Length: 268
Picture 1 (cartoon, rainbow, N blue to C red):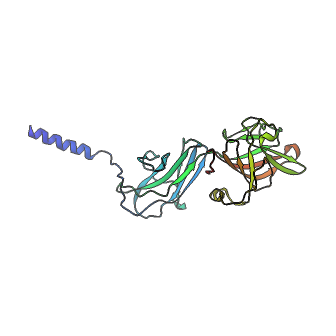
Picture 2: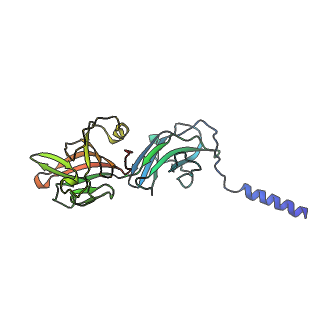
C-alpha cells in the first residue's frame, strides 16, 4: 500500500511540474518599456513603445483597463506578445481592437522576462478611442457628401439632424459652418481657429496651451488651418484643412478629422 501511495505522489508531482508556467508578478531587472505612445482610431488603438534593453525576454503584456490603478488587471493580449515584425525601427506596435469609442482606457506595458517574471510597468497613458479620418466635403446641397456625422463616422446630408458641419464658398472665399446656420433646429456647434501649423501628433499634446480664436458658428478656412469644434453635446473635434479642388458648384474641401467622444474633456 505504501508503495502505491509513493508512486501516486511521484506521478502527482510530475503532472504538476509539467503544467503551464505562470507569469509571476515580480521584477528581476531594471528593464522597463519606454516612450509609450497611443494612437487611437475608430474602436481601436495602436500601442507603441520602445525597449532599449539587451536582455533576453519572452515578450510583452499590454494592459488596457478602465481602472486607473489597474488593480488585478489582466493583460489585454491573449498570451505574450512577441513584438512586431519590424525590429529595425526600434519600436514595438500592438493593435488593440474591439474597443468602445468614448470610453476612458488606461494603457501601460510590461516586459515578460525570460524567467517569466514581469518588469515594472511603463508610464501610463489615458486614451479615448474615436474616429480619425480624411474626408472630402462637397459644397452644401451639391451632393450626398455635403455633411459629416462624427458620432456615426459617416457622411450625411448637410441638413441631417446628425450632421456636425458643412462646407461652402462665396466670392472666392471658403468657409465651414455649424449646421444650425442652415436651420435653427439643427446642431449648434461652435468653431475656433487654432494658431498652430504643425502635425496632429504635436498639436494634441499642446492643445491646452496654443492660442485659439473665440468660438463662432462660421469660419473662413484656408489650406493647413487647424480648427477646434465644440459640439452641442460639449464633445470636441480637431479639423485640419488639407486642401481644395474644383470651382463653383464643383468646389470640394478635403479635411482630416479627429473626434473625442467624451463630453467636457479634450482627450485626443
